[in-house]
Length: 436
Image 1 (cartoon, rainbow, N blue to C red):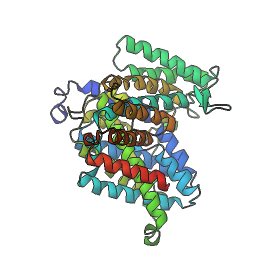
Image 2 (cartoon, rainbow, N blue to C red; image 1 turned 30 degrees about the vertical axis):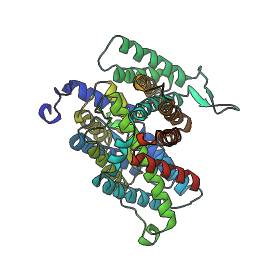
Image 3 (cartoon, rainbow, N blue to C red; image 1 turned 180 degrees about the horizontal axis):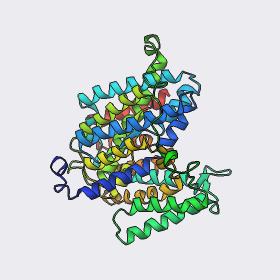
Image 4 (cartoon, helix red, strand yellow; image 1 turned 120 degrees about the vertical axis):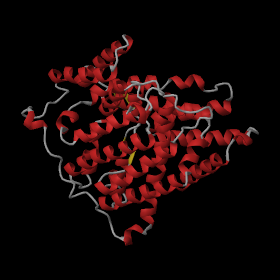
């Protein structure tokens, strides 16, 4: 492990990397509950989707660990699973879940081809450094918002878009307690502060009724074989539906969201970990993107929606994770979750919320590197930052930032500072909005 991942070169050690990997898993373990719940609404077997979720995360994160050697974890993406269920299947399109699963498979295959010709790498490298720093900050606000929302501290407002939840309810109280505990541990420089904070908060949540123990809690009730994949694996539609306009629209949407969610996440987390070189490029980025693409194909074959790189990887990076050993540790946890699902899934959102909020704080540091004096740089960066939480989408934040960057540079006589790829992307974004 020392030689393969070059731990000393990255100023880390095995203990730090393993702890970081477990921390990443704990902050994203909610997907093991949420993804089966969402996809089961389409008629898919909830047990089969659970197994597909854990297995696809295990496979994709293992590839990230050993092929890309980065501390990033992957799993079926939030937002993408909602599009799968509520737009393609249950929404106006009214397609079968098999149709949606086929679209995910096609998207993954296209991604592999794009990764082989380094098209996605070109997109990554084309984003200006100021926007890359802005993406990190925007993701920080976005995941902090996810945490506050999951703990019901922030809720849908009465007559307004969002508002403050009832802070007398158990979940917000537990999240606030967890925030205080984790904050104290960080202030005291305790190793593994984020993971310890999650565990202590989960335990405190038991008498409060927020952490729900499995019925008849004991060894026999928490250890079991994984549910069967038979009903969801390799369930694809025929050729006549593949070559249809509806399939083209669905595949394009999956492609668009996944490309920029993945690129945005890689930029943001890598920026925070100071993995970007002087030109703002991430070494071996094509390997990281390939892990994402293969993970999507594997996920579709197993029976789940698009697999993507998770912003929660930032929690492991914040704990000191710098190499593929972190991702390897996360993958092992996903593998174990197949047999110990009740233990992992009983961690409530209120217990992971404090970590997401604090990681949001950690992600804010690159804001100091943004040029706020040049408005052709500052305005796009600001739009990137605020649109991620406001639009509840990393991808849309990037769209606003990149389009405004190109337009402002072009109309202020600084068009030569913009790369051809940026012009092309901005044009595609504008066409997408106009034709949607």
